[in-house]
Length: 273
Image (tube, rainbow, N blue to C red; front, side, top):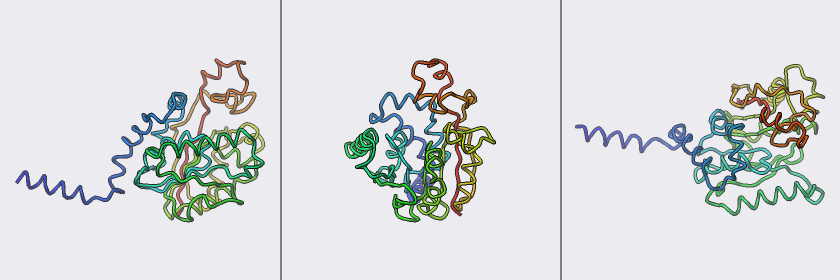
């Protein structure tokens, strides 16, 4: 009888679709991604500030999902997300869309290195599709209504400065399926900070982000203090760029800013109703 019960249990487990098993196996998958040999020592050092496992689990990353990462830059989060969805889901790396002929050399070089890195490691990045996004001009970062999860890390201040906030959030809404999640991590300003000062310092208020998402049709679905940093006073001479990793002041008060660490950040998720 005992053997029969074990056999029956094994049969039931084999019938559970991957989407239902995913909640159990995503933690170990993220751990393996973080430990992968594709990550540099410099990127590993930032794990303590960026809390990638906790952040991605809060946003609801699952291995079978279609994910769009907005403006991955050099690919810090890409190298964590990509191995999780490898072979089961898909990751659209929606890079900054510009006229590459007119782009600064630094930006062109970084993008070439990023795309070349994806191609060089199909064992890690085999489920990554490089695309571009800069709303309202370029919005085809993924098939409309196909994404389970759209993620953006420390980008909202750039869109505010360029006057593209509403267009970008509207684009995210269009990319997501009904019930899909938008995850936003951003440098966090003190409540009541003017928009002008937000743009100047790189710190955005939670109110600014929430209202932008709601204007685009999203519903607030929760926030986390995973990436909070109470040491960050947010009154630095060169804004958020005073802190690591940028350290805009160079050696001036370097130890002071290293002791503070990376910025205080909001971590908020929204759902497309």
